Structures are given as structure tokens and as C-alpha cells.
Image (tube, rainbow, N blue to C red; front, side, top):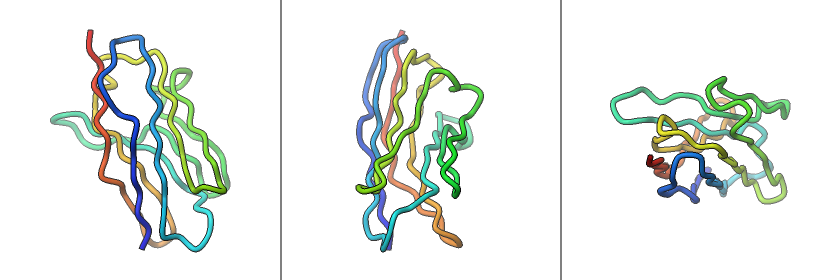
Length: 115
């Protein structure tokens, strides 16, 4: 059973930066398709950024140029560097791992951007 644990969330002023981490455990090998989603209050969960099964990084247009996803394959860890944060980035950020046919989710970490 794969478990995902996120960390790095918090309160930051608009224009600031945060770095989220997600560590995966319980997998027999490296997990290629790991990424980030977020859910703001009253809204549906949305895609933020991910590595695909072939290792490409894909971003939501709303975060392109501000967020960067990276990984440490040896540690099964994925990171999300978030710069130039905006009020609308406030959400719970969830890590997701895809090992077909299973999809795994972390518990989420809160990111709050204040003015």
C-alpha cells in the first residue's frame, strides 16, 4: 500500500514563496507519475502540476512560470516550488501518485496566501 505524506504548507504573503514536499512510501520501485492537485474552499479539486508516466512535467496554465515541479527518484519524493504566490493560490494541496490501475492521494497540506 502506497502512502503519500505532504509537508511544507503554511501562511505566506502574496508574492512570497513556499516549497511543498511529498514523500511516497510502500512502493516496490520508483513512481513515475507523481504530481500535485489543489482544492480551494467551495471549489473542485484541480490539477496543478505533475510528472507524466514518461517523465515529462506538465503544468496548469494558471501556475506556469511561477511553480516548478521537481523530483528525487531515489527517495520517491516530489517537490513543488511555488513562487510569486497569489491570493487565488490559497488551497489545500494534495500529492497524487499513479500506479495503474491505482491512484493514491496524500492527506493534503494547507497553503494560505494573505494580502
